[in-house]
Length: 384
Image 1 (tube, rainbow, N blue to C red):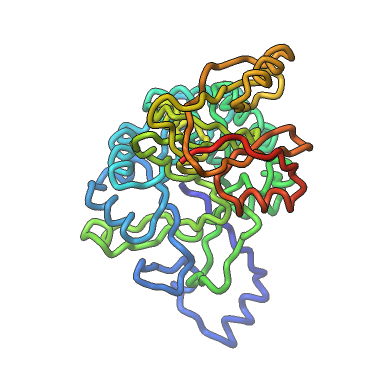
Image 2 (image 1 turned 45 degrees about the vertical axis):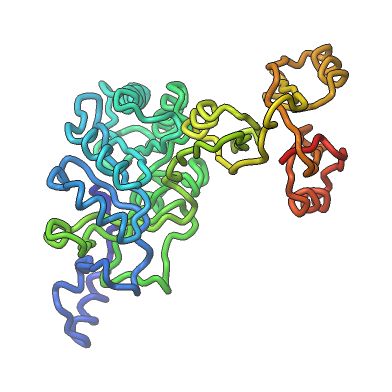
Protein backbone atom coordinates (compact mmCIF):
# COMPACT_ATOMS: atom_id res chain seq x y z
CA UNK A 1 0.00 0.00 0.00
CA UNK A 2 1.17 3.48 -0.74
CA UNK A 3 -0.59 5.73 1.78
CA UNK A 4 1.63 7.84 4.00
CA UNK A 5 0.95 10.67 6.38
CA UNK A 6 2.25 14.00 5.04
CA UNK A 7 4.27 16.18 7.38
CA UNK A 8 3.67 19.89 6.93
CA UNK A 9 6.27 22.22 8.42
CA UNK A 10 6.17 25.98 8.17
CA UNK A 11 9.14 27.23 6.18
CA UNK A 12 10.11 29.86 8.73
CA UNK A 13 10.06 27.37 11.58
CA UNK A 14 12.09 24.90 9.58
CA UNK A 15 14.76 27.48 8.82
CA UNK A 16 15.09 28.32 12.50
CA UNK A 17 15.43 24.65 13.38
CA UNK A 18 18.04 24.07 10.69
CA UNK A 19 20.09 27.02 11.90
CA UNK A 20 20.00 25.93 15.53
CA UNK A 21 20.21 22.16 15.07
CA UNK A 22 21.68 20.88 11.81
CA UNK A 23 20.01 17.56 10.97
CA UNK A 24 20.75 14.77 8.57
CA UNK A 25 18.55 14.43 5.51
CA UNK A 26 17.64 10.83 6.35
CA UNK A 27 15.96 11.99 9.57
CA UNK A 28 13.12 13.31 7.39
CA UNK A 29 12.43 9.82 6.02
CA UNK A 30 10.90 6.78 7.73
CA UNK A 31 13.67 4.77 9.35
CA UNK A 32 14.73 1.33 8.23
CA UNK A 33 13.58 -1.07 10.95
CA UNK A 34 14.72 -4.52 12.00
CA UNK A 35 12.49 -7.28 13.33
CA UNK A 36 15.18 -8.00 15.94
CA UNK A 37 14.51 -4.63 17.61
CA UNK A 38 12.28 -5.34 20.62
CA UNK A 39 11.67 -1.64 21.27
CA UNK A 40 9.38 -1.41 18.23
CA UNK A 41 5.60 -1.89 18.22
CA UNK A 42 4.33 -5.42 17.72
CA UNK A 43 4.59 -6.90 14.24
CA UNK A 44 1.05 -8.29 14.03
CA UNK A 45 0.36 -7.99 10.31
CA UNK A 46 2.21 -7.70 7.01
CA UNK A 47 0.47 -6.64 3.79
CA UNK A 48 1.64 -7.84 0.39
CA UNK A 49 0.78 -7.52 -3.30
CA UNK A 50 2.26 -8.66 -6.61
CA UNK A 51 5.40 -6.68 -5.69
CA UNK A 52 6.13 -9.45 -3.20
CA UNK A 53 6.03 -12.23 -5.80
CA UNK A 54 9.57 -13.06 -4.64
CA UNK A 55 8.29 -14.54 -1.38
CA UNK A 56 8.69 -18.28 -0.82
CA UNK A 57 7.19 -20.69 1.69
CA UNK A 58 10.30 -20.26 3.83
CA UNK A 59 9.64 -16.50 4.00
CA UNK A 60 6.07 -16.99 5.22
CA UNK A 61 7.22 -19.57 7.75
CA UNK A 62 9.82 -17.11 8.99
CA UNK A 63 7.26 -14.31 9.36
CA UNK A 64 5.13 -16.62 11.48
CA UNK A 65 8.16 -17.47 13.64
CA UNK A 66 8.86 -13.73 14.02
CA UNK A 67 5.47 -13.13 15.62
CA UNK A 68 3.43 -12.07 12.60
CA UNK A 69 -0.17 -13.25 12.96
CA UNK A 70 -1.88 -12.03 9.78
CA UNK A 71 -1.01 -11.63 6.11
CA UNK A 72 -3.10 -9.08 4.19
CA UNK A 73 -3.08 -9.96 0.49
CA UNK A 74 -4.02 -7.59 -2.32
CA UNK A 75 -6.70 -9.26 -4.42
CA UNK A 76 -7.84 -6.62 -6.90
CA UNK A 77 -7.79 -3.03 -8.12
CA UNK A 78 -10.51 -0.99 -9.81
CA UNK A 79 -12.61 -3.32 -11.94
CA UNK A 80 -9.81 -4.45 -14.23
CA UNK A 81 -6.99 -6.05 -12.22
CA UNK A 82 -6.58 -9.20 -10.14
CA UNK A 83 -3.29 -10.00 -8.42
CA UNK A 84 -1.95 -13.03 -10.34
CA UNK A 85 0.06 -14.15 -7.31
CA UNK A 86 -2.79 -13.91 -4.80
CA UNK A 87 -3.63 -17.62 -4.77
CA UNK A 88 -0.06 -18.79 -4.23
CA UNK A 89 0.51 -16.10 -1.60
CA UNK A 90 -2.64 -17.12 0.27
CA UNK A 91 -1.77 -20.81 0.03
CA UNK A 92 1.73 -20.24 1.42
CA UNK A 93 0.43 -18.02 4.23
CA UNK A 94 -2.12 -20.67 5.18
CA UNK A 95 0.55 -23.37 5.13
CA UNK A 96 2.59 -21.24 7.53
CA UNK A 97 -0.38 -21.05 9.92
CA UNK A 98 -1.08 -17.36 9.32
CA UNK A 99 -4.47 -15.66 9.36
CA UNK A 100 -5.59 -14.27 5.98
CA UNK A 101 -7.19 -10.89 5.33
CA UNK A 102 -7.50 -9.30 1.88
CA UNK A 103 -7.67 -5.84 0.33
CA UNK A 104 -8.79 -4.02 -2.81
CA UNK A 105 -7.15 -0.85 -4.15
CA UNK A 106 -10.08 1.49 -4.82
CA UNK A 107 -10.10 3.62 -7.99
CA UNK A 108 -13.55 5.16 -7.91
CA UNK A 109 -14.55 7.37 -10.83
CA UNK A 110 -17.61 8.01 -12.97
CA UNK A 111 -17.18 4.86 -15.08
CA UNK A 112 -16.13 2.72 -12.14
CA UNK A 113 -18.43 3.23 -9.16
CA UNK A 114 -17.98 1.89 -5.61
CA UNK A 115 -20.70 -0.75 -5.94
CA UNK A 116 -19.12 -2.14 -9.11
CA UNK A 117 -15.72 -2.30 -7.45
CA UNK A 118 -17.17 -3.95 -4.36
CA UNK A 119 -18.81 -6.61 -6.52
CA UNK A 120 -15.56 -7.10 -8.44
CA UNK A 121 -13.58 -7.55 -5.21
CA UNK A 122 -16.17 -9.97 -3.81
CA UNK A 123 -16.20 -12.05 -6.99
CA UNK A 124 -12.41 -12.29 -7.10
CA UNK A 125 -12.25 -13.26 -3.43
CA UNK A 126 -14.91 -15.94 -3.80
CA UNK A 127 -13.03 -17.38 -6.77
CA UNK A 128 -10.08 -17.95 -4.43
CA UNK A 129 -12.27 -20.00 -2.10
CA UNK A 130 -12.00 -17.68 0.89
CA UNK A 131 -14.88 -17.83 3.42
CA UNK A 132 -17.37 -15.01 3.92
CA UNK A 133 -15.87 -14.43 7.37
CA UNK A 134 -12.69 -13.09 5.72
CA UNK A 135 -11.86 -9.48 6.61
CA UNK A 136 -12.32 -7.46 3.37
CA UNK A 137 -10.51 -4.12 3.27
CA UNK A 138 -11.00 -1.14 0.99
CA UNK A 139 -7.67 0.61 0.33
CA UNK A 140 -8.71 4.28 0.14
CA UNK A 141 -5.81 6.49 -0.89
CA UNK A 142 -6.08 7.22 -4.63
CA UNK A 143 -6.25 10.93 -5.50
CA UNK A 144 -8.48 12.22 -8.28
CA UNK A 145 -11.92 11.04 -7.16
CA UNK A 146 -14.36 13.96 -7.13
CA UNK A 147 -17.02 12.26 -5.05
CA UNK A 148 -17.37 11.85 -1.29
CA UNK A 149 -14.94 9.15 -0.17
CA UNK A 150 -16.86 8.37 3.02
CA UNK A 151 -20.15 7.81 1.20
CA UNK A 152 -18.38 5.86 -1.55
CA UNK A 153 -16.73 3.67 1.08
CA UNK A 154 -20.11 2.91 2.64
CA UNK A 155 -21.44 1.91 -0.78
CA UNK A 156 -18.39 -0.28 -1.37
CA UNK A 157 -18.87 -1.98 2.01
CA UNK A 158 -22.57 -2.55 1.34
CA UNK A 159 -21.72 -4.28 -1.94
CA UNK A 160 -19.47 -6.65 0.00
CA UNK A 161 -22.25 -7.35 2.51
CA UNK A 162 -24.70 -7.97 -0.33
CA UNK A 163 -22.26 -10.62 -1.56
CA UNK A 164 -22.30 -12.30 1.85
CA UNK A 165 -19.05 -10.93 3.29
CA UNK A 166 -19.55 -9.95 6.92
CA UNK A 167 -16.44 -7.92 7.72
CA UNK A 168 -15.87 -4.94 5.39
CA UNK A 169 -13.22 -2.55 6.68
CA UNK A 170 -11.13 0.41 5.52
CA UNK A 171 -7.49 1.39 5.08
CA UNK A 172 -6.47 5.02 4.70
CA UNK A 173 -3.87 7.57 5.75
CA UNK A 174 -3.88 9.58 8.95
CA UNK A 175 -3.93 12.76 6.85
CA UNK A 176 -7.16 11.69 5.10
CA UNK A 177 -8.74 11.07 8.49
CA UNK A 178 -7.52 14.38 9.90
CA UNK A 179 -8.87 16.28 6.88
CA UNK A 180 -12.22 14.47 6.94
CA UNK A 181 -11.84 12.84 3.53
CA UNK A 182 -12.51 9.59 5.36
CA UNK A 183 -14.86 10.29 8.29
CA UNK A 184 -14.13 7.94 11.19
CA UNK A 185 -17.23 9.10 13.06
CA UNK A 186 -19.34 7.60 10.26
CA UNK A 187 -17.23 4.61 9.23
CA UNK A 188 -16.29 3.69 12.80
CA UNK A 189 -12.77 4.09 14.16
CA UNK A 190 -12.51 0.40 15.01
CA UNK A 191 -13.19 -0.41 11.33
CA UNK A 192 -10.24 1.66 10.14
CA UNK A 193 -6.64 0.61 9.54
CA UNK A 194 -4.65 3.83 9.55
CA UNK A 195 -1.28 4.41 7.86
CA UNK A 196 1.10 6.86 9.47
CA UNK A 197 4.83 6.47 8.97
CA UNK A 198 6.70 8.38 11.64
CA UNK A 199 9.94 10.22 10.97
CA UNK A 200 12.51 8.38 13.00
CA UNK A 201 11.85 5.13 14.83
CA UNK A 202 8.42 4.24 16.30
CA UNK A 203 8.37 2.89 19.84
CA UNK A 204 6.30 0.30 21.68
CA UNK A 205 6.23 2.69 24.63
CA UNK A 206 4.73 5.52 22.54
CA UNK A 207 2.06 3.88 20.42
CA UNK A 208 0.08 6.05 18.01
CA UNK A 209 -3.43 5.79 16.54
CA UNK A 210 -4.64 3.40 19.24
CA UNK A 211 -8.24 4.58 18.78
CA UNK A 212 -8.33 2.81 15.40
CA UNK A 213 -8.51 -0.87 14.59
CA UNK A 214 -4.89 -1.13 13.45
CA UNK A 215 -1.89 1.07 12.69
CA UNK A 216 0.47 0.55 9.76
CA UNK A 217 3.57 2.19 11.18
CA UNK A 218 6.26 1.39 8.61
CA UNK A 219 6.96 0.32 5.05
CA UNK A 220 10.58 -0.35 5.94
CA UNK A 221 10.57 -3.42 8.17
CA UNK A 222 13.43 -5.79 7.42
CA UNK A 223 12.66 -9.21 8.87
CA UNK A 224 15.79 -11.20 9.63
CA UNK A 225 14.72 -14.82 9.26
CA UNK A 226 15.67 -15.43 5.61
CA UNK A 227 18.01 -13.87 3.07
CA UNK A 228 14.97 -12.80 1.03
CA UNK A 229 13.43 -10.94 3.95
CA UNK A 230 16.73 -9.31 4.85
CA UNK A 231 16.91 -7.81 1.34
CA UNK A 232 13.30 -6.68 0.94
CA UNK A 233 11.47 -4.35 3.36
CA UNK A 234 7.80 -5.02 4.11
CA UNK A 235 4.84 -2.98 5.34
CA UNK A 236 4.11 -3.83 8.96
CA UNK A 237 1.20 -3.05 11.31
CA UNK A 238 0.12 -3.43 14.90
CA UNK A 239 -3.40 -4.82 15.37
CA UNK A 240 -5.18 -3.09 18.25
CA UNK A 241 -8.65 -4.65 18.06
CA UNK A 242 -8.41 -7.98 16.25
CA UNK A 243 -8.90 -5.90 13.10
CA UNK A 244 -7.60 -8.52 10.68
CA UNK A 245 -9.59 -11.36 12.20
CA UNK A 246 -8.40 -14.54 13.79
CA UNK A 247 -6.98 -17.70 12.37
CA UNK A 248 -9.91 -20.03 11.78
CA UNK A 249 -9.57 -22.97 14.16
CA UNK A 250 -9.31 -26.55 13.03
CA UNK A 251 -11.99 -28.39 15.00
CA UNK A 252 -10.39 -31.43 16.65
CA UNK A 253 -11.72 -34.87 15.85
CA UNK A 254 -12.51 -36.28 19.28
CA UNK A 255 -14.63 -39.29 20.05
CA UNK A 256 -18.05 -38.49 21.57
CA UNK A 257 -17.40 -34.73 21.60
CA UNK A 258 -20.17 -32.14 21.74
CA UNK A 259 -18.69 -28.95 20.28
CA UNK A 260 -19.70 -25.50 21.51
CA UNK A 261 -19.75 -22.53 19.13
CA UNK A 262 -20.79 -18.89 19.47
CA UNK A 263 -22.17 -16.51 16.87
CA UNK A 264 -20.78 -13.02 17.66
CA UNK A 265 -23.37 -11.39 15.41
CA UNK A 266 -26.46 -12.47 17.37
CA UNK A 267 -24.93 -14.12 20.49
CA UNK A 268 -26.38 -17.55 19.70
CA UNK A 269 -24.68 -20.59 21.20
CA UNK A 270 -24.82 -23.83 19.26
CA UNK A 271 -23.94 -27.30 20.53
CA UNK A 272 -23.34 -30.11 18.06
CA UNK A 273 -21.79 -33.55 17.97
CA UNK A 274 -21.28 -33.18 14.21
CA UNK A 275 -17.64 -32.20 13.59
CA UNK A 276 -18.37 -31.22 9.98
CA UNK A 277 -21.11 -28.82 11.07
CA UNK A 278 -18.83 -27.37 13.75
CA UNK A 279 -16.03 -26.77 11.24
CA UNK A 280 -18.38 -25.18 8.70
CA UNK A 281 -19.68 -22.77 11.34
CA UNK A 282 -16.15 -21.90 12.47
CA UNK A 283 -15.16 -21.25 8.85
CA UNK A 284 -18.14 -18.93 8.40
CA UNK A 285 -17.21 -16.75 11.38
CA UNK A 286 -18.57 -18.49 14.48
CA UNK A 287 -16.20 -18.64 17.46
CA UNK A 288 -15.19 -22.15 18.47
CA UNK A 289 -15.38 -22.38 22.27
CA UNK A 290 -14.18 -25.94 22.77
CA UNK A 291 -15.80 -29.21 23.81
CA UNK A 292 -18.82 -28.71 26.05
CA UNK A 293 -19.27 -32.34 27.19
CA UNK A 294 -19.35 -35.85 25.76
CA UNK A 295 -22.19 -37.72 24.14
CA UNK A 296 -23.52 -40.94 25.63
CA UNK A 297 -21.60 -44.13 25.02
CA UNK A 298 -24.83 -45.86 24.01
CA UNK A 299 -28.58 -45.52 24.53
CA UNK A 300 -28.35 -42.23 26.37
CA UNK A 301 -30.98 -39.60 27.07
CA UNK A 302 -31.93 -37.68 23.90
CA UNK A 303 -31.58 -33.90 23.89
CA UNK A 304 -33.83 -32.08 21.42
CA UNK A 305 -32.51 -29.21 19.33
CA UNK A 306 -34.87 -26.42 18.31
CA UNK A 307 -34.51 -23.19 16.35
CA UNK A 308 -36.52 -19.97 16.54
CA UNK A 309 -36.84 -18.45 13.04
CA UNK A 310 -37.99 -15.12 14.47
CA UNK A 311 -35.23 -14.78 17.09
CA UNK A 312 -32.58 -16.66 15.03
CA UNK A 313 -31.15 -18.71 17.87
CA UNK A 314 -31.12 -22.30 19.13
CA UNK A 315 -32.44 -24.02 22.23
CA UNK A 316 -31.89 -27.47 23.73
CA UNK A 317 -34.04 -29.52 26.08
CA UNK A 318 -34.25 -33.08 27.33
CA UNK A 319 -38.00 -32.61 27.94
CA UNK A 320 -40.34 -33.76 25.17
CA UNK A 321 -43.15 -31.78 26.80
CA UNK A 322 -41.10 -28.58 26.58
CA UNK A 323 -40.05 -29.42 23.03
CA UNK A 324 -43.67 -29.92 21.94
CA UNK A 325 -44.73 -26.66 23.62
CA UNK A 326 -42.04 -24.69 21.78
CA UNK A 327 -43.02 -26.27 18.46
CA UNK A 328 -46.56 -25.09 19.13
CA UNK A 329 -45.21 -21.54 19.48
CA UNK A 330 -43.46 -21.60 16.11
CA UNK A 331 -40.07 -23.05 16.99
CA UNK A 332 -38.63 -25.46 14.42
CA UNK A 333 -37.62 -28.90 15.68
CA UNK A 334 -34.22 -29.96 14.32
CA UNK A 335 -34.25 -33.50 15.67
CA UNK A 336 -32.00 -34.87 18.37
CA UNK A 337 -28.99 -32.68 18.95
CA UNK A 338 -27.12 -35.43 20.79
CA UNK A 339 -27.55 -38.11 23.46
CA UNK A 340 -26.22 -37.78 26.99
CA UNK A 341 -25.49 -39.81 30.08
CA UNK A 342 -23.01 -39.42 32.89
CA UNK A 343 -22.82 -37.92 36.35
CA UNK A 344 -21.74 -34.29 35.89
CA UNK A 345 -24.53 -31.68 36.00
CA UNK A 346 -25.04 -29.44 32.98
CA UNK A 347 -26.44 -26.12 34.18
CA UNK A 348 -29.06 -24.13 32.29
CA UNK A 349 -29.00 -20.32 32.46
CA UNK A 350 -31.38 -17.79 30.89
CA UNK A 351 -30.69 -14.17 29.92
CA UNK A 352 -34.00 -12.24 30.14
CA UNK A 353 -32.77 -9.36 28.00
CA UNK A 354 -32.07 -11.44 24.90
CA UNK A 355 -34.14 -14.54 25.65
CA UNK A 356 -31.12 -16.76 25.09
CA UNK A 357 -29.92 -19.77 27.05
CA UNK A 358 -26.47 -21.08 27.86
CA UNK A 359 -25.66 -24.65 28.88
CA UNK A 360 -22.43 -25.43 30.72
CA UNK A 361 -20.78 -28.04 32.93
CA UNK A 362 -18.61 -25.32 34.42
CA UNK A 363 -20.05 -24.31 37.81
CA UNK A 364 -17.84 -21.22 37.87
CA UNK A 365 -19.13 -20.03 34.48
CA UNK A 366 -22.70 -20.70 35.60
CA UNK A 367 -22.17 -18.71 38.80
CA UNK A 368 -20.58 -15.86 36.88
CA UNK A 369 -23.64 -15.62 34.64
CA UNK A 370 -25.95 -15.52 37.67
CA UNK A 371 -23.92 -12.63 39.09
CA UNK A 372 -24.58 -10.84 35.81
CA UNK A 373 -28.36 -11.19 36.34
CA UNK A 374 -28.87 -14.33 34.26
CA UNK A 375 -31.65 -16.54 35.64
CA UNK A 376 -30.83 -19.97 37.04
CA UNK A 377 -33.09 -22.56 35.40
CA UNK A 378 -31.58 -25.51 37.21
CA UNK A 379 -30.27 -28.78 35.86
CA UNK A 380 -30.55 -29.29 32.10
CA UNK A 381 -29.21 -32.89 32.09
CA UNK A 382 -26.16 -34.84 33.18
CA UNK A 383 -23.20 -35.70 30.98
CA UNK A 384 -19.59 -36.83 31.08
